[in-house]
Amino acid sequence: MGIQVVCEFLPREFKEKLVEIATLEDLAQAGYSQNSIYKIKEKKIISDEKCEKLVQVLGDRVKNVLVEALNEFATQLIKLGITVSSSPIDCSKINSKLDEILQLLKTNKKS
Image (cartoon, rainbow, N blue to C red):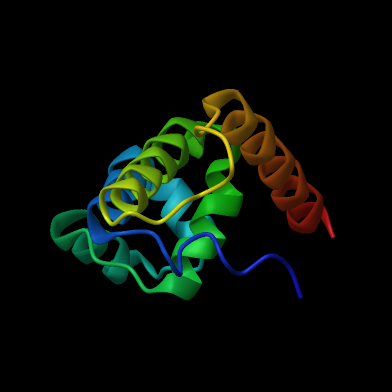
């Protein structure tokens, strides 16, 4: 069982961006049938499970979308007064962790 947490907390607008990035071939690799692919491209609605597979298929192409989503999430936490850490959010740490996650996704995709 691979990492299954990326899309669970990903807001719809960011899932839509993943669908926009994906080619028809990418969506097929993520498990969509030919009929479903065109509906997905049109409506831009995907389940968390298929989103996870799509993130694996897209690999490094999703990095900017995920970084943007993480930054938006951190901003919302700050607005709610929730402390993320004892120090201000360090975007380089977010990028570093995201690189680790993407590497794990690549490893899981190969196995």
